Image (cartoon, rainbow over all chains, first blue to last red; front, side, top):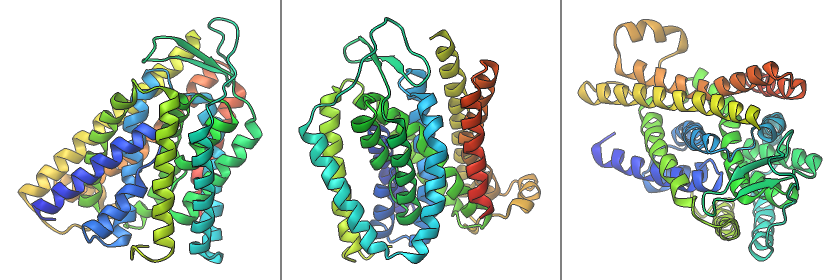
Length: 278
Length: 108
């Protein structure tokens, strides 16, 4: 890789790390098109490097979010097996199903959730007793207001299904997971936006590990490119959480809706073959 | 709540350590690669130790990538250990299910 390309990869990775860590996304949706379309890197190499980037994003952001007490570790651990199984099933289904049609269907679902999240305020059930956080119910200190926020997790079953679907999506399309999990946790399960994005960040690394390990063993991870992406993403993932710290949950939800719209637009373009990728 | 602080502390400690370790190794490897560029192909796992002994830059980078991949697994194990110490059987099982699902994905 020459110097200019290296700088381009670092900048793209840092940007993906910032956006990913702010909204609980892996950032692959940003890294892959930039690497392939913007920098002319081979699709296969881009996928391998981006999976490593997802792990870096998750590790970097989660180490910060966990120490700030924002991640609902128990909820994440309960949902993780569903996501991982979902991605295995998705990888198999991908062989039999028409990917472009799937991408369009998913894009439609994302647009719907975007409108929902943009227009409705979040509904969370707060526990009454001071300091009462156990099992899946959790609490954290909101850095913006300094208040202790306590919330109750609802609809675990629907959340498990959504996590399975999120895994499915990443297994079939190589994209997402976070874009399904964050709305599911926030809208269905009553997890405040700040905790939902932090928890999604925390979970994404584990989901990506399975895929990354398979590629690594088969020699499909390009070392130099992946290392460059990882370093850029790490830098971004340490900036993102600081940027979002003082944003209100309501505003975060709106920003997230805009990110959803942008991502579904990208998916539609790709499904229609307008980006030349995949 | 005190227990949750402990869980948070250990899990974030593992993630932080994994991050620092893989950043250092990756940066070192990239620096070595810039100083003595070579082929950019990945080194098979069984040849990694001997290539590391020869201080091959790509081997150092591959080690960093491996450390990065292992970090999320390490934090699942750390959480499982704490859940076990706190006798939260349900969450120990959830942690093991995570590992089993990853193993399944790799085997398939």
